[in-house]
Length: 340
Image (cartoon, rainbow, N blue to C red; front, side):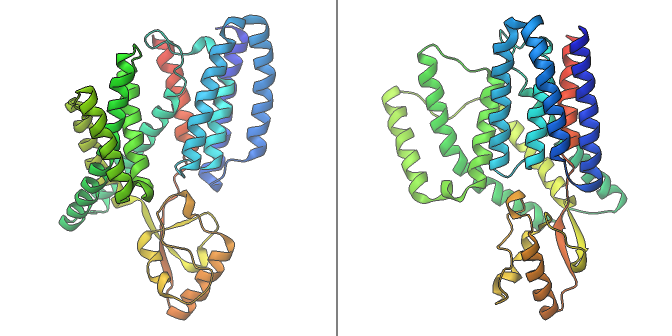
């Protein structure tokens, strides 16, 4: 590595430390810090790609665009907070193109950092939940398991209709000489299944029947089975489902009404009784994602409702400081590159 590359990695570590620290302590990633590191990154990039690795500028630009698109999608789908998305883009600006992992015949792999960060975050939640079960003796009830399996199979079979159409599209483009990496295909399949599960419009009968008929017609014309026969996809889904049931036992905490703050997310169970109240401004039924973060106005309405109903505590979804997982994604990516 040259001096600029070492400086860039050092800046990534410093930015990661600062953002993770404020996210852990205050639940925020400050724009001022991100702007500072973005400005430094642009200056470093001008020198790095202007004088040292001009041939890699196009690769840097493509990786940055891919990261920006994925981060934006995660933000718009309420999976990433705005600070997490911006932090990911800033760290991508800082990461040197000569240190990209080459996978197959391409170095368009910086988006692996997002996948790594999600895996690290998932493993943290899983281990934390298992620890809570051991220490606090929390248990998963039979009813809880049955309910979650029912919900999963319902969502999965609906998603399977859309996944079948995606498989038909893959077969079509494969016949025309374009093939996607197996892991990229798996990632897209999981994204489709996850996106379908989060959006009610894809659960409507009209959408399901229409997609099924299009898939059926295409499969008959192409003489192809639209469902993937690779069992690894299904094994992985069931492993994730099993882990998810553990995680859901430890994502909530009880908080007093007077301690509610803007940005907190109420549990679904807490918001259901509020729908029967005539108090104006109460939050709608929570989907327990970032789209349901409380505002000051909603908190004021909740306090009025709580006073009338004599409720003193509510259950909220725990704040997960994701900046530390974003940081881990880039650091682990760099470590993998250095060992190859």
